[in-house]
Image (cartoon, rainbow, N blue to C red; front, side):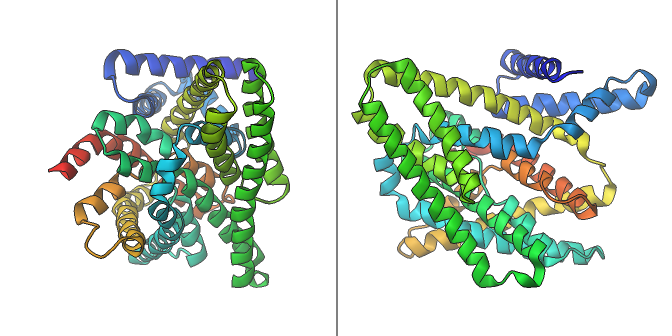
Length: 412
């Protein structure tokens, strides 16, 4: 089957899952698509066991095995998703909670990575499985980023207070970039072995993060000047599209953080650009265009998340360890939230209920899966794919569905 035919099939399958969710489940799009795709994937596995000679699973497995999920998300989709999210974040509100957001997105990611790595290392020891610490750190880094997309619609329905919503969304926009940079830095350290010192690690981390933010701000300002000098909504929409693609392409060529560059550009265009450089008609068309892009890419992303279960070998030991990793990851997130927020808030202001809310609302998504799939082939990659998939599935389906109850619990 050629690429166009596969794309047609996949888009049709996405629409079908979205339709089934809308008509029958009526869940938020991200959760509903993941659930429908996951159930259909399980039905396909059962169908293969019952009628192996006539199974339709083989072509789908072949497609998923060859589909570059990590490249599609980290290099093609992520920039558009982050820009669409940053475009609607109010900078003034973000700046008012900047200390908490930065602490969660930087210190929180580092603490979560270290704690998760330690717990995973111990889990392996308990069952006699030797997981090298550097591999445990890779898993800690890839599972650390939270997904802003999956929680945005839920927050509105759950009645989450605005200040808590902006902290979670702001953290998610930034910690995507921080965690990806951290993951890549640890990966480089693992590949270089003794030739890669701690000083080089922090230098690479700082270069990618700060360089990415500066690049995004510079390109965003240049785009702002272009938008301000014209009044043609079609051309202005194209300018925002080119901005995202240029940010990511240049960042990759210069070895900077593409996600952070796009977030910086999106915040600038979504605030100063929206107020000072766009007419009301342009704002309407830009918002409509990016909502459509956001909806399409997220539908595809969460459908892929649901279908990725087909790539798991489903080994009993790996499944058992993956289930045990879920509370370990949540515990690491809880401690990282508590410690990072305590530093920027006066003692006594952060309650256990609020810490639990920030922990539970930090949903994992496709970025974790994409980073895991970028690991080199081997048994540890297979093990971590089980870890990552079950954590993401639990996060989207269980945490996502119960956020309204947790928010209500917080108010009582």
